[in-house]
Image (cartoon, rainbow, N blue to C red):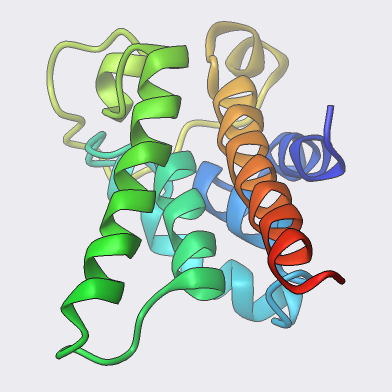
Length: 159
């Protein structure tokens, strides 16, 4: 188990939302202070503001990938394409493990959530939700991408 997986799961269990837990677990790696990472990712919890759309853990994972490996030149179609390829491969890995990227499907809910009020974080909450594991899965995937890229870099440059 990677330290990022452990850290993300720990943050979720402390009460941070799923997106915050993943994104903030990598804050040091991204050269970002913890509080800024929490603020940037705060809107994506509960499948984007509790709308139960794309899982916040997945959004957090994608934000880390964008911060680490994203593109900046809108005319550089090759780099943009390669980045989207990375994002799609990460999505596939998450989906292969968890069967979906959609929060409500991961939670076994049929309809979109209409409440903006977060559920209380009780022992019962943690028992009935897969979120801590989902956060861990997203952080693990991101960690493995980073490890793979670091080993490729060393291979290519002899570092």
